[in-house]
Amino acid sequence: MKKLLMLGGSHFQVPAIKKAREMGHYVITCDYIEENPGHKYADEYYNVSTTDKDDVLSLAKSLKIDGIVCYASDPAAPTAAYVAEKLGLPTNPYKSVKILTNKDLFRDFLATNGFNVPKAKGYDSIEEAKIDFHHFKMPVMVKPVDSSGSKGVSKIDSIDLLQEKVEYAMGFSRIKRFIIEEYVEKYGYQIAGDGFSVNGKLVFRCFANDHFPTSNLNFVPVGASWPYIMPKKIHDKIHDEIQRALNLLNMKTGAYNFDIRIDNKENVYLMEIGPRNGGNFLPQVIQYATGVDMVEYTIKAALGEDCSDLKLVEPEGYWSVYMIHSKKNGIFKNIEINYEIEKNNIVEYQLYVKPGEKISAFTGSNMTLGMMILKFFSESEMLEKMKTLSNFVNIIVE
Image (tube, rainbow, N blue to C red; front, top):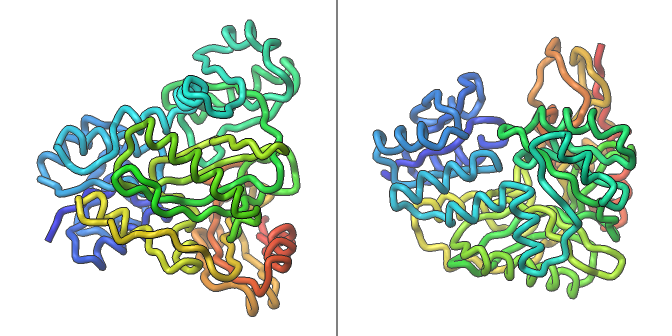
């Protein structure tokens, strides 16, 4: 029985913890929230922050682990790579993982290596940013350099809003640093999805259409749908750009989560390549669509097991994931789901909150109240229903 250290025990990590146990491994979880639901599925739990590299290293040494997994968490990805590298366990290079999980380092990497990239710069203080602000073409995005799930992200077109939005971004940055970057106007849907490399080669990827709220002030996806509706040549072009990045970063074997845009000239912009599986049940929907269990491959990779049988499989059917969310703050009372949607489309459904709990309006993935996996009969039904799903899944607050 191999010992596997899993970083985190939130709702999003539960599928990986359960899968590792099903595969016969001894699973140890750690984070600083004892109440997280994943810990009850583990063999052991330790109250150690997943972002404290040296504390996790000490824990890993004492436990004599065989592998370490960061599942669906950007902040913990550098920790997993750092610990694995120190202990001689399978991993992608720590230096490269740091680049991929830090927005200003990643933008610098893209620019240096000739990728399409918006003009961008990282800052430690508002004063520095004010000096440079008018050198950017409006509008611009203000983001924490080290957060995921669209937390702390704003779009502005005036210096008058800079102070407020920088303070908002800094509230989600552990290292208290933010980035300003020019806005990339997308052509069609923003691209979501996951992929997997074996010995540096991107052998599997499954792109999706990102769906956002109707308000253009909210940059948090509320869902994703499969397959990505652009022609094969666009899929291939995106694949090639990802592969070029993986080659330059000397990546090895493991999972990736993508946020990508193309413009109206079909230029590819690699907005994010997260060195970990996607959260929000993306791997679970991908398994429905392709039959590929990316969670299992992630665990095998962490333990140095053979992943060479993984091949590209195109999705079959029409699938989506939807993040159940509230449009306002309040006390959660109930959820009302349209009968036809529930009967004809919902395949899986989980709610993370109970009546009487305080909930917040959806401004980041940490505000997700639950998840739905849905199946549709056609592309047109999928895209139409994803546009209006919030009208059919109603959160009652008081």
